[in-house]
Length: 129
Image 1: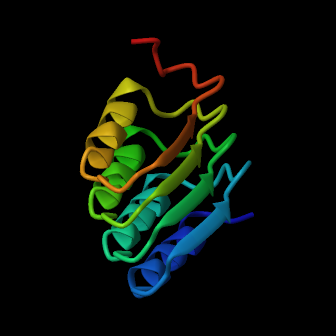
Image 2: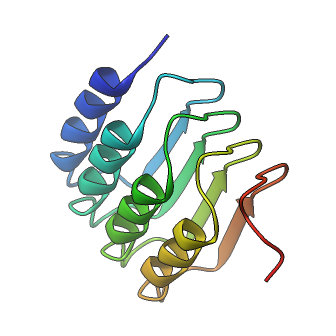
Image 3: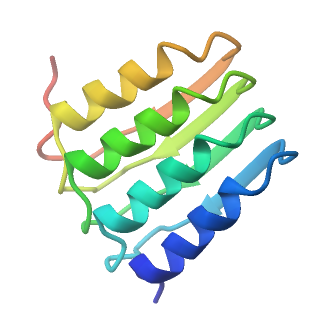
């Protein structure tokens, strides 16, 4: 399966995809993807200025924690053209409210967003607050 090294390579490629407008990746059940891989994706997002649609499935990925989700939020803070976002974290048990808060802070700069879908079903460390 895909692990951090593979996801890091994807993140590096993403950082050079300046004209990319739409991206859909499915990392579902990738237990070997950890913080290093998710951070690389967040860093790659920082340069994806033309991106308007992003759909990532991290369902049942248990290898990353709040630091990885925070890095995604930081990357999304630069996605000013983003209009549609779908992130699936179903059954991801490694992160909690701190990661979700950081993700929300990153999205606060995404003024073009018109559609958002965030899924946290069975994320035991994410509270109801």
